[in-house]
Length: 435
Image 1 (tube, rainbow, N blue to C red):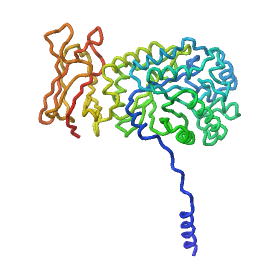
Image 2 (image 1 turned 90 degrees about the vertical axis):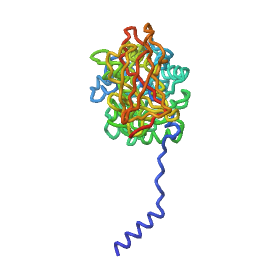
Image 3 (image 1 turned 90 degrees about the horizontal axis):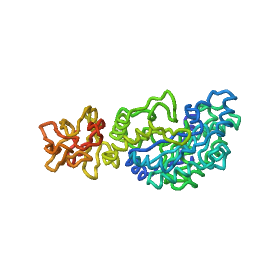
Image 4 (image 1 turned 180 degrees about the horizontal axis):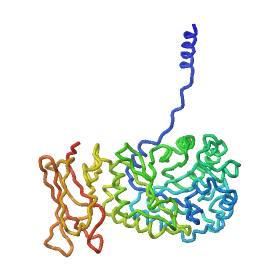
């Protein structure tokens, strides 16, 4: 009898219970556009860049004296008078980026825009200008997509609320702190409605679901990256992942500007990471940490310009591509493909002392030539080597029984010392893929 009653109750509930509301998602067309972009610039910048400390996190576990000085004294000395939004945008464009994601508000709660929700913002500093507005306008002029980094966690709000500053306690999250959630929604509304076209948003918190759904419902043409898609931080997945996904990574060891004890990745290392990420199907969101005066440190600019030269030559192998099905790399060679053009791009890495005009041969087991196959090295015409007229640098290939052999020269003179340290990209059209 008890079993019968229970079964009847389950049946009644299954008939009359309202089904759960479906979760809203990014539009698939917008995700495809995002996957086409390939390279973005991340900017971590807040008023504690003056200290050279880790951004925001020094507030967790800090003494009341430290917290009070941080919230009340640091804004009084933040004066990035060397900030030039147009110069930044031009540099990012030259670097080959398609989009830029800016920290409008990190965990500390300091707003880099003219917000009406709190006095803890850029307008109440000696600088007194809306940095977010200046930057987003400059990015749009350069045709760069605009992304908002936004932390739903807010240490300043928690402190004013009388809540202990922390990241992993219940009240630090919008899912448990209703007042914080309402506050964040007002700030998101300001950013989404007052600053032109916003293309994407990166929500950085342990629990972002309610805010993600809020954006999807109110701003459906904004792509949510972190909060909806996988965004590995400071690492690249071991294998390919179905898109969209995005690795975010620092140039050195810290997100924000670190004036001392910093170790930067080489330009070649950054380029190799971009290649690996794209071969595995992801986007690379590479971080820049501007100085407190608004300049981009020369060490970071150097790497952006080295990347820019490489992208100027090879960007067609990075943008509007997808990974090769089932094949990421073969030895030192990584692969991407442009299905519309029936083209495969082979990134030849790990080559030291490749002198201008010298020929090198490589074997590939995953590609097979056809009678329509053509080969070229991106950036060069395969007709001439400067100051070496008898050298004809024509790219060639031979199809062996089980291997495709390619023979290429690095003929273009990109550095004065005639030795190019960064990967050469070979374009092969109309080849068969051997899995």
